[in-house]
Amino acid sequence: MSILSRSRRRDPALLVAAAMVASTFVLTAAATPSDAGDGWQMAEPRLTTPWTDQVSPSNALPEYPRPQLTRPSWQNLNGLWQFAGAEAGEAPPIGEDLAERILVPYPTESALSGIARHEDRMWYRRTFTVPESWQVGHGQRLRLHFGAVDHAATVWVNGIEVADHTGGYARFSADVTDALAPSGPQEIVVGVEDRTDATWQPVGKQRLVPDRGIFYTGSSGIWQTVWMEPVPARGYVADLDMATDVDTSTLALTVDTVGDAPGLTVRAVVRNGQEEVARAEGAPGQRLDVRVSDAELWSPDHPFLYGLDVTVLDGQQEVDHVGSYFGMREIGTARDADGRLRITLNHELRFLMATLDQGYWPDGIYTAPTDEALRFDVAEAKRLGFDTIRKHVKVEPDRWYHAADTLGMLVWQDMPSMRTGGIPPPDARAEFERQLHEIVDEHDSWTSVIGWVPFNEGWGEWDREATGRIADSVAAQDPTRLVNANSGVNCCASHGDSGRGDVIAWHAYTGPADPAPDDHRVAIDGEHGGFGLEAPGHMWYEDGHGYQMAQDGAELTGLYVENQRRLIPIAHQRGISGAVYTQITDVEHEVNGFLTYDRRVGKMDADQVRAVNDEVVRAVDRPAVLSTITRPDP
Image (tube, rainbow, N blue to C red; front, side, top):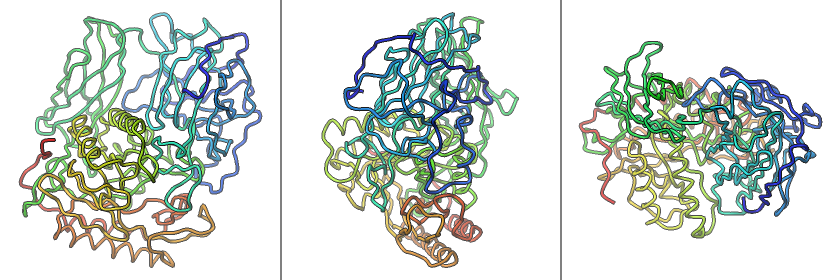
């Protein structure tokens, strides 16, 4: 990171001692600095969730963080780290104790972190030991992983810079083997800069000063799991790129390996439970077609997932082995009986009944307090009769998408927007596009993700032609999913309809919106509803707002049911393929959720919500006559 000095000075004698035991695949206790937590305590939350009190230095998100590429040996580095605010130009505090303690991976502004304030620049520091059983330096290398750090991060191990990454929503990792001391404690220092909406960096709804409206508290620093694992020195699996074709019952798999190792072979074995149902072999880095006879299809009604074992071989010798999974499913478009373009899932028309999910927590801000909490919002949406979530201008940890895959939830994935107001300069535009494609690349194998949304209501948009070009570039990068170039193109800061992508989405409050499909794009209501109800004792502020307020739960439920039923004539007359209701939970001043911000109170009658959602879907879906993603030439 350019603001902080990148001195490579190294003084192992000054390292703070720490003890860490080797972890297992099932559970890993987060290792802590040598002071064992002295000087740390959770800040007082403005609101607690049912999981707040379960969080401690010994169990800060201990679950395996990468469910689509698993190895048995790994170690969690969540827990207590040393912390300090920083000034521009400071040298990294190699070998120096820092005054404060922070609970990683909760962002600095959160109560769970123990810091509960924003810093533009900050230092993290801790030590770790490498298990001797990993044989690092003897045929094995050590990789250090960061799920996400907002926004720009530089990492030093024993005073040697090992990683530099910009972008608060993408994971990154580094081979730190050559920076390790021969034995004993090893030091990690992380420098972070996050100026939030004082710059043009992608921020979603984060703001330095929340507006008591639709923009919220910032979420700075390390906010996803930090961990490490041993990997083979040659030919280890770095990435699995997966796409499915339901017409041929085929998994298209590319196994990317790292390490100069000519002559390697990859073997893929597909399993239904313990039973092997398909296998194929090929070369690393080349597409491997794995045919699964009579494949079971994945859908929200039947979220069936195949297990996948991938082995890298040098002749008959195993070099690396990883586990994964996938669902066999198609997303596309088709013309209904009236000739209008509609969305299909597995070649059947499907009305996508969605809710907006912003992924904010009163105790952890961007980071759910526990894995159970992370899964809870997805499960609640499912319980309320939704089959789709619009993940709104935020990207989640991998385990959230794993929950969507396993529970059976489709996902519209937004790109976190730049700030509103003004036109971003050229360098910010280029960085926005780079981060967008990085996010697509990291999430294009999740079964649940069925569409990309580069822009929302024109936030951070600079011109209509560029929006169309970006939509085309995302479609080219991932031709297996739909692209909604600018959700809410009819609204707000939008520069107008580019005509590109696969989806046209309008927003209307309280709505619903009523766009119509054209010759190459389906239409959806991208946002509507937003009916609000204050719940004293469960609110971030002393008051709150919605787009129309109710006096009690019965009135709120009635407003919802009436509003949802309006989707039926809109779908019949205009041909929309889905709708997105705002929203699953309250967030700060917004009190238009099905649940309060603390997830303790359900504000509507869940049975009536589920019933009307089912009623709309049954009334709208009709047979398809053709299935394809239809895109015009750029």
